[in-house]
Length: 359
Image (tube, rainbow, N blue to C red; front, side):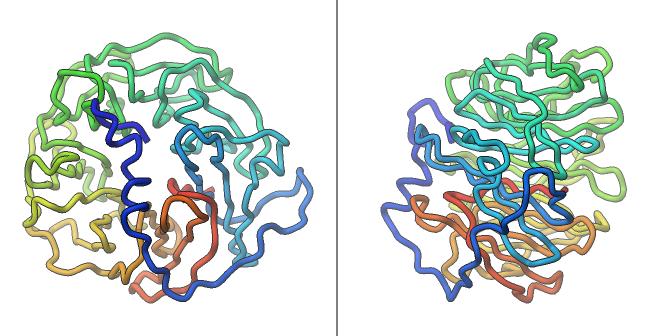
C-alpha cells in the first residue's frame, strides 16, 4: 500500500512484520478449496481480498461459504485462469456484480458476485482505491496518486472523465446525492490530508469540504442519517486520533471525540446491522454506541497477540469478522466472532487478508 511522500508506507506493514513476528493463537487449518465448477453459485458468505505483497503480483481472492463454513482460497484464478494482480484493495457490490479494485495493477475487474467469473475490466487507471456506484450510468473511483476522482459508466466500464478535487482521495460514501470523499493520504501533494470533500453526484463537481483530523480513513452513515468519520491522526502520530459525527445535510460537525493516546492509529470504522453501534480496530476490536461521548477504555475483543488488519460486520447476523495479517509474508487468517464477542472459528486465507465484502 502506498501512503506517504517518503515511501515509508510502501513497506509499512512489511517492516512491522519483519521487526516482530507475531505468535498465532491456536488456529484451525481449513481446506483450500471445494471442487466446484466455474458456473456454480457460491452461495451465501463473504469475500476476502488478500492484498499480497507490493510489486509481487500475488494478490488473491477468497470466499467463505456459510453453508460449509469453509474458505475457498485462490478463487479468482481458479474461476478465471488469470491472476488477480498486484495489491487487491477493495470491492464494491452493485446488483449481481462486484467491482474489484487492484491498486498497483491500475485495474478494476468486474465479476459476477455469485460466481466470481469475470464480466468486465477497466484498466489504464493511475492508483485506484475504492469504487462508489452512483447509478447504472456512472460510478466514481478514488485515487491515491492523482488529485481527482475518475468517473466511468457503470454498465459498460467506459471512462467518462475526471472530477478535479485538488487532493488525492480514498474512501467514498454516497448519501442523498452527495459523495463524501476522504482525503486520507498526503503522498506526493502539498494539500493537507485532514478533510472530507463533498461531491455533487448530479453535477459531478466538488462543492464543499469538511475539516476533520489528519488521515480520515473510514466513514459510515448511522440509523439517524448521521455521517461518522474516523481519523488516525497521521502516520507519524502528529495529532490525537479522532472520531467525528457530522450532519450530512448542513455539513456541521455535531460531535468530536478524541482518542486518549496519540500513539494509537484507529481504523476500519463500521456499523452493526441495526446501524446503532460503531466498531473499529485499534489493536483490538472496539465497540461503541452511537450515543456515547467517549472512546471505550477497553477493547470489546482483545487482540491476544493477533495482528488484526481488516474488520467487517455481517449485515444479516451482526457477526464480527476480522482478518489477521500475521507477518505479512505468509498466509493470514480470518476470525469470526459472535455479536457478543465470543470466537466462532479461525480460517486460513491468503497473504495479507484485507477487504471483506458480503455478497
